[in-house]
Length: 529
Image (cartoon, rainbow, N blue to C red):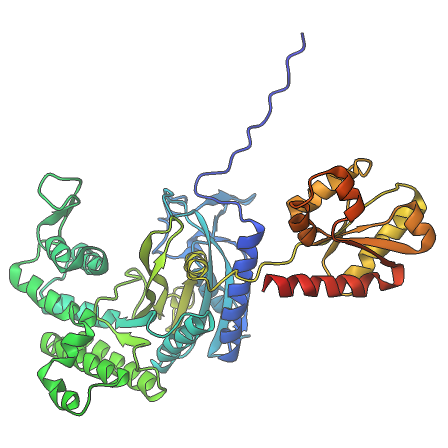
């Protein structure tokens, strides 16, 4: 007996997902709104390939001796290592350096595309995901950073996120370096441990961060419970200085309003949103001044933040949309100045219906050293990256995305398979398409007409077009309202009643087909509304 050939097992690689029509359309809808804002700010699109030479990805990604570390890499026929891009920033740096003499500086550009991480996947963590970036290369002043923050606020609102439901938080790597200097931390490994602990403020709160800054923290909250994360080993005085400063950015509005310096405004009837944020900023800058007064790097970073704050407030964005926040820590490997993060503050249901805070949906900062890797000379740059999949999920759960489903196609059924009949069916289909109506001609086994209506039902088709030999001889066509028919058929009990009722079906001349379909679709839309 002949052995059956082995079948290849269909399986999706770990950390990757298939995208379906509703997800694709929702992301396209979202990206169109983001693109409109980027274009309005004067940014132009550029596209780079998904593969780069591995050494072009930068020292902050794979090691030279481990070309597959963190990225997916292959060797070409010249035995050179190529890697799938890890983000969209490193390819842009390579593109700018390679075309430096041909591009106009400042170079303002945006691009969307998939990036790839050769990392262990987990819940909500994929190996392929989409980013949507905007960057300005060749602008040394922090006005470019301030513009990035304002543009991100405009993107949030273009996507339907209300003011108060998001915030663009801003900090500066120079401030963070100044803090390290002020508390006497010079070891690079210890610096990273401290900064990563600060970055956990939202997740673990002040007490959890205090443990991470000290000896360490048990995941379970008590000694011996869960895994142990070794801390930064700072003394009590250094920990206290850090917590005092980094808690300022998260001070609640009522605490600020009850601060002695706010008493006069409170007596005058309360603080406006802009006044509240201005007072919060004063508290932050006061904290910087007390901790960083003898660290030139830190004071320079604070000065840049003050300039950004002045620019965004003068443009009307100092009302809570943009906030100076010492706890923002990101891009430890390559950001050199201001860093910013877009955070959703609204409580949003996740896929399981649980109410959660989505937190960060994008971020960026100044990376003056990245292009310089290729050119050996300073090339200032700043940019912002939106996590498309994460933001799209939040928007869908908020009811801000994918709420206008695409109407399924009208189905032109096939009653006869001869050349004349098939030509007619195709003619009807193309006439509907030419009028801007989604339509398809049935391509399955047409001899079982019941299967065609079942297919239309599964597709959600609103109408079916039917023409047999008699209708064709009379120049007529039947249009069956499948939406209304489904409602009425529930009230019909016998086949005789069905045949007599010809449920939700009418006959029109071929010339009236398109206009009648248009009217019936409009009536359905009105009924749905």
